[in-house]
Length: 205
Ligand SMILES: N[C@@H](CCC(=O)N[C@@H](CS)C(=O)NCC(=O)O)C(=O)O
Image (cartoon, rainbow, N blue to C red; front, side, top):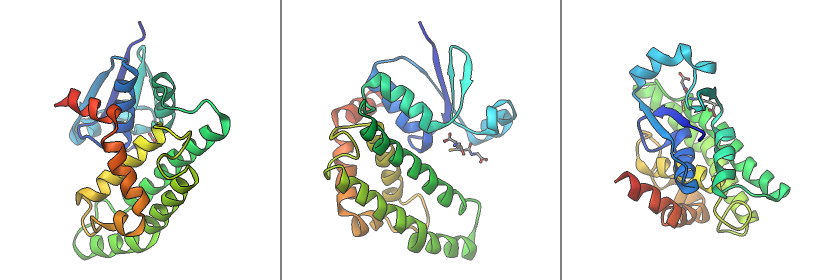
């Protein structure tokens, strides 16, 4: 039997979370190896590209969270077969990666510098991406991003919107998504109550 070990930070979010949910949806056992930031710093030189997540498949490490989401998503039935729908799904995954890079730029700042950077982020890239995701959702029919059903694109968006709503990013209004993209805000609630997502979090409780 193939073994899977996913190494990522110890929180229910970020690049690792859609992969964890997809593993659970697939009914595939995996080692959910959660590490602290200190452990990450100590281990990163042994990680390809010095980044997390790392997925070990039968002991062989693989990087790139979106590739992992597609791989596990295919096994879970959460990735479109149709090439165009798969492209729509990939677009959402890739755009979230781009957005994350803009957000990460503001990490490590403090005080006024943080406030200024976050306000710029909110008025600039964050608004651009939130409105952009609203458009992609509309294109998909309003409920899901691709294939008219739950895919890993929905999981990726759900995890990101949940983070934006949570208030963990100082100076980012928690109602920003609701104000700019009501369909995306409803999408968050829809995915949160999807049986696949509910079952995953019930398994963690
Ligand atoms: N393209 C990579 C990016 C991975 C990445 O940047 N991971 C972050 C954590 S979410 C990281 O390891 N950051 C450490 C750092 O930049 O110091 C992926 O999608 O897996």
